[in-house]
Every structure is written in structure tokens, then in C-alpha cells.
Length: 427
Ligand SMILES: *[C@@H]1O[C@H](CO)[C@@H](O)[C@H](O)[C@H]1NC(C)=O
Ligand SMILES: *[C@@H]1O[C@H](CO)[C@@H](O)[C@H](O)[C@H]1NC(C)=O
Image 1: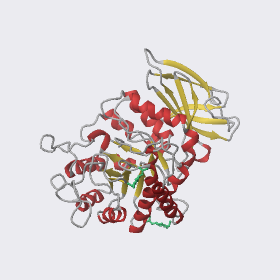
Image 2: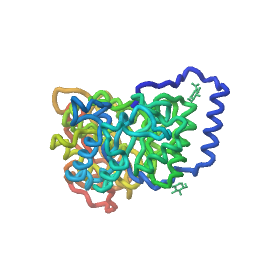
Image 3: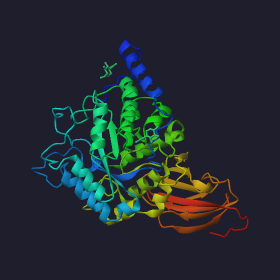
Image 4: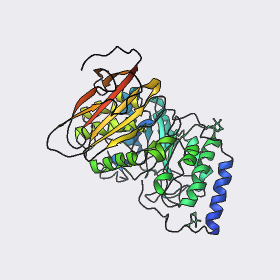
């Protein structure tokens, strides 16, 4: 979550203090291996996270079913295991901000709010693990979390050990109440502290989201996934601004995405209140193209069945989870259409065509495979991805015809290169 950002990009003067943090940061770097070597996130992580849907609701008195509490997290874990999400690959059950007591305990250790988490975090982790799922938690690198609870500043090693003791499998480390020079020290220091616990903990950094011109190569050495844009909100403006940001900056950060290290455009809001059905599909399709973590933030207890089908779509998940781990890029943009292409293993390709313009009616679009960035093979066997429906064996000059609904209508296509020159059929 990004509420306050104390970094002031106006002031590029390197004062003594900043230089100290810089040197500490460099010292931390020099002790690290070339890339984060914890064996995790070989494909984009999948799971559920509390933030976008449940925020910082700590009012269990008036809203016991929806406040941030062990009951809420356990119910979500139950639904993930029972309703097919676990089988589809969703595994992390992650608490976000606002699980904390307002103070550390007498030994300086973090502790949860005792009325909302009466059984404690170790017990909650055990509950999640018994369901075959993984336990995610939230902290902040600064003096406080974004919502004002105790941050990890001056407690990095102790907090890493506390999380390991609780059986935590993933840490989202936010960046409120700190500054750019401190990030360069603090985020790598936490990576090192997590490693020192001996427990593999998937590490999500908010570092690049808080600074201008993030050093992605350095960030990728220390973090499994990283947020690089503001928090997603439950509306299409927010989702399309993220898609545009990823389209506009592909050259800056798509190239650092790889197994073990992925850009994170934030949670999936499929099944919430602010998007249309077409826009739910658009988010799922684009997140697949972006090799983005698939972290749902939705009330799994009361969920639209069509939204659940989108989140559980095996073909789209397979694109997202492609083992090559390459992030897709935008290859075309005008005022009404954007197209994106992602290279998959074995020369396979995924293409998304997104209609950004508004109504009033569905619009027809004809595009050759060549125009969609598919020209390496003599022909491709192409499928519409959501339905798994065969389109045809197409040469690069053949056109596909698609109809796109207004404001978010999306066509997702997966194509396999065909070595046989005469394998074409007409479409
Ligand atoms: C810690 O880092 C070392 C060296 O990079 C690596 O081999 C090891 O698997 C890491 N351990 C954990 C728990 O992340
Ligand atoms: C950055 O944060 C550190 C740690 O809180 C602090 O000591 C330092 O004064 C801050 N630097 C700037 C330029 O604000």
C-alpha cells in the first residue's frame, strides 16, 4: 500500500547520511549472491491477499465477518482448498497490513492484535499448512507500516526470525515511512536476514513503487517479486492505468522478469464490485501476458461463479505459468486497440488484443499474424485461449477476425509453431 512517500526526488544532493546508507547498501550487496537464490517463484506466485478487498478493517465489533482477523484468513484458506483454487495452483494465503498489535512485545518482537488473532500467528500458519497451502504475511521496511503499525526499521533480523518461527512462507515488505537511500540498504538487508533463517520465504518488495528510475537489475537480485506501481483500486481506470504503465515501460522492466524474479502489477480484483465481466477477463488475460503474480483479492465465500471460472481457467493460467518466465510486451497501440505478445516455451506465443475505447457496440478487427508479432514460423496452430477453441493453422499473412466488446473486451490467443509447411486449413 502506498499512502505516504517520504522520499523527495527534488533533492539529489548526497549528504553524509545518505552516503552512509549508500555504503551500507553496497556492503550488503557485496555479500549477496548474484541473484536471489531461494528456489522460489520459478513461475509467477499464485495466491490470495487481503488488501484490496478487505483493507484495514479492524472493526470486528460491528463487522465480525469482514474484519482482518484469524477467522477471516482461515475462512479464505478453507475456500481456497475446497473450491478448486488450490488445485488450480493458488497457494499463498496472505495477510496484508493491520494484523499487528500497536506495540512490539517486551522482547522487541512483533505480535498480532490479540483480540483479532487470539490463537497467534504460529497457530494460523499451522492451520494454513494443514490445508496444503502457504502462509503469507506483511511488514514494512520503514519505521511504521502504511497504516501506522510497527515497521521493521532497526528490527530486520529479529522480524525475519519471528516470521520464520511462525512458519511464514511469503513476506510482502512495504515501503512507507522510509526513503530511497534507506531502501537500497533495507530491502537487501531483509533478503539476507530471511536467507539466514534457513526457511525459504518468498520475498515481495515494494521498493520500486516508491522511487523514480528503479535499479531493476539490483532489485531482481534481492526480491522474488516487486511492486512497481501504485495500489490497484476496484475500477477500470486503475486497471487500465496499470496496463498502460506495463505497456509503456516494457523496455525498462520486462527484461528483468525471469524464473525467480517477476514484476508485480498488484492483486486481481476479479469478482469484486468495480469491473464488468469483460474487464475481469481483460485483467486475467493481461496478467497472464505480463507473467504477473496471480494474487486474488476477493471474498471467496460469496463469489460470482463466472468470476471464479475466469480465475480458475486452466488455459489462461497455463499461459501465466509458462516455465520460460518471459514477460510479454505491448507491440501495438492506438486510441482504441492495444496488442500484446508473450513468448512461451518451445516457440509458442500468446497474444492479447485489448479494446480500450468505449461503446457503443462490439467492433470487428482483422489482423494478420504478422501484425500480431507472429512471423517466425511457417505456420501456427492457434487457439482462442479462454475456451481452448481451435482457430486454425495460420501462416503469418493469414488474418484472424475478432469481435471486441467496448471498454475492455479482450481476445486471448495461444499459438504453437507448426514445422510442416502444408499444414494449413482455411478459417
Ligand atoms: C540462502 O542463500 C544461499 C546462497 O545464495 C542459497 O544457496 C540458499 O538456498 C539460501 N537459503 C534460503 C533459505 O533461502
Ligand atoms: C532516510 O531514512 C533514514 C532512516 O530512517 C534517516 O536516518 C535519514 O535521515 C533519511 N534521509 C533523508 C534524506 O531523509
